[in-house]
Every structure is written in C-alpha cells, then in structure tokens.
Length: 181
Image (tube, rainbow, N blue to C red; front, top):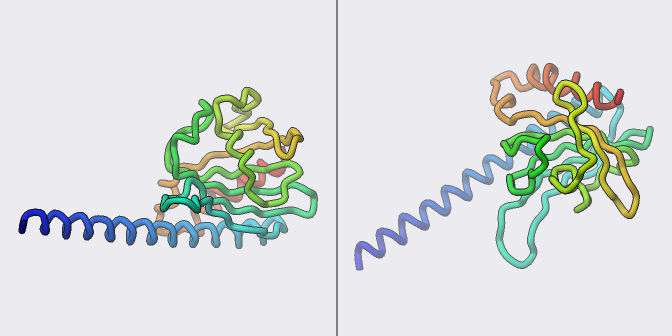
C-alpha cells in the first residue's frame, strides 16, 4: 500500500511539474511574441490582429500551434507560427524542429485558418525552397489560392541573453526580405 501511495505522489508531482514547465514555456513564448510584434509593428507599420492557440473543447490537450497575425495596409499579413506537434510538419522543406515560422501571406487578415496547415504538409506540391532557406508556395483559403513565402528560424537562436539583438539580427532582415518577395 505504501509503495502505491508513493507512486501516486510521484506521478502527481511529475504532472504538476510538467504543467508548471509548460505554463512557464508558454509565458516565455508570449514574451517573445510581444517583442516580435512590437519590433515588426514599429519597423514595418504593421498592426497586430490576434494571437491564437488552437485547443480541443472535448478533452484536455496541449495546443498544436501558437499563432500571431500582423497585418499591413497593403493587404498582406505577416504570420508568426510556433508549431508544437512535429507530426504536422511533413513538408520536406521545413525541419520538424522547435522553431518559429514567419510567413508573408498575400491577402492575409492576420487570423489563423485550418488551411494554413497546408503550408507545412507534404501533400502541398506547390511548396518549394526559393533562396537562402526561404520557402514559398500556395495554399487554399476559402476556395481561393493564396501565395505565401516563409522562413523557419530555430527556437535555439532565441536563447541568447540579448533578445533584442537577436531579434534585430535574425528577424528584421528576414521579414524585410519576405515583404520584398
């Protein structure tokens, strides 16, 4: 009986530690998104529309994506996506690693649509490498083909103590290139 109680206590402790770790991770990711949003809105005159975390209303689960949409007056959006389910990244042009994907979506409104998963799917034959690690293609949104260009940035790059410097060196030039495409 005592051994069973010890195992239950250990399992409960482990579950609470994992939840605490995930909540801390989510808070850090939200902080990173806030920094990215502030920087891109200021630099490129974008406006943040919404942050989105998909969830399942039937059972508890960890979200598959953290999404943030930024829109321009020119009709495109810059979408920042962190995907937690590596099984969703099946397209050979994306690495199934913890990373942030930043995409310029033509005719974007800054909101997440289920059709965005097509960007990362191996069934999307339009996806190809363009230059210097950039990825481009099309996907179907509301019965309409929409073009995108994207860059994937390894999450490890953001572990630097000087986050502002990393954002200036890693994010700004890459988003500027995406906007030009």
